[in-house]
Amino acid sequence: MAVTDEITPTTGPGGDDLVIAGQRFRSRLILGTGGAPNLEVLEQALVASGTELTTVALRRVDPSAPGSLFELLERTGIRALPNTAGCFTARDALKTAQLGREALETDWVKLEVIADERTLLPEPVELLDAAEQLVDDGFVVLAYTNDDPVLARRLAEVGVAAVMPLGAPIGSGMGIRNPYNLAIIVEEATVPIVLDAGIGTASDAALAMELGCDAVLLATAVTRARDPVRMARAMRHAVEAGRLARTAGRIPRRRYAQASTSFEGLPDLDTPAE
Amino acid sequence: MSGGGAAQGGGSVVVTVNGERHEVAPGTTVASLLDRLGTEGRGVAVAVDGEVVARSSWPEHELAPGARVEILSIARGG
Image (cartoon, rainbow over the protein chains, first blue to last red):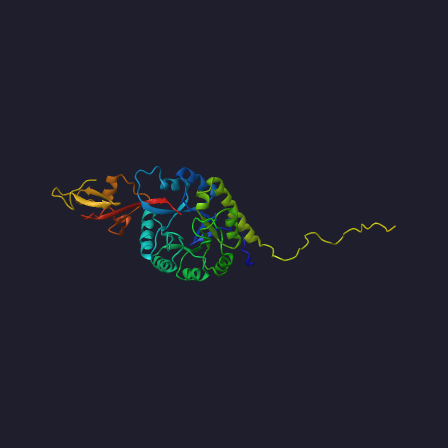
């Protein structure tokens, strides 16, 4: 698999923070809240993941709902990133982004504009339109997008704060279906690249980081795992390991063996011929 | 919720809140509606007739007869 050789320098604690729109995050894992069976498990998983940023949706108030997600976020100190999940058009996404801004008093938005309910794939034309309008309106836009290097470039050009390509469809757990496209997106990146959607297990998250993504955003892989809290820990370690491996600079792949032990100084152990 | 018409003689106003009919006093604002419903304002956003109402306008924004009010809160979502 094509992996670029670029090595990111790290300078001790804090030197390898994720920076999005000037905000620093020590964790490179963004954990979504979708799919969690209840708030108690969600809170434990969020804490176990070490995340400092979590996505939330906006839905009609349910007076009968037990507990408060807002209080959970306050208690844990995790920053909330409102999303536009469920929007099919730029118009809907703009309205939903405005609602998120009012609800959470933040200019940050995870922009999602999907094409249909079956694939939940991003709708590229509406997405780019929405991204441009939201940026003009002062939003800090983190754009969920296809694994398309050209669209990623266009989104960066209209001023999004982060480009978030999918690895595979939302909730599919299929991992990274096109690592070559992802490598191109990373190579060309002028803003942080966050792998968003498709992660199934820890090795998928590690691969995303090894390919050079700046962060990973996932939800279902944790919230619908048999043991969400344990999987949250696994993802935390996977993202850290993948980042370390990326910055350490992996060895090149080669067809034949390369001895790690020197042939110099081998003893002569031939026995004399009779 | 009961309600006879868009505006009854006694001066109540019928509005729709999250798809349900509600009868409110004339002059009811977004802020007073939230109070009446016992909805805490934190983590909540409001749209009236499809337009987002800024938090700072809640105390002044009066609900007209037939207003469609959407009250949203943050919820679990990817």
